Length: 101
Image (cartoon, rainbow, N blue to C red; front, side, top):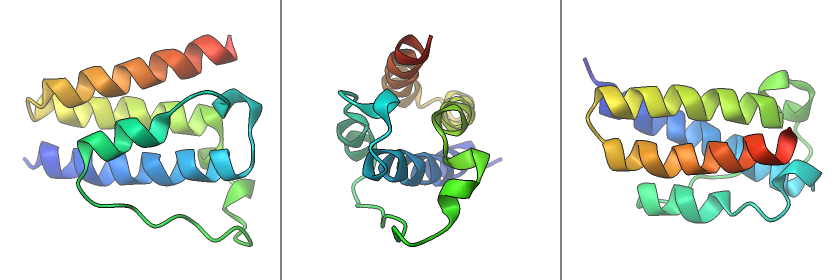
């Protein structure tokens, strides 16, 4: 049971989604500093998707998809007892939900 490793992998996916949404200038992402949260949880920078890529066609690459991925990531970290990571990500999810409701 490698919950922490699964959480880190899921975190990187969430980072890529957030970076894509920011590059697409999604209004729901305006004023949300997801990059600082992600960088505080991982020591290395993730590569961003190519802007010419068609990833934006997937529902995963939406704000709803980002929230879904972050919630999954939080669950991995909680199972791996990295509660402080979960708290930071919950704060980010709360910002996204508040902005979208």
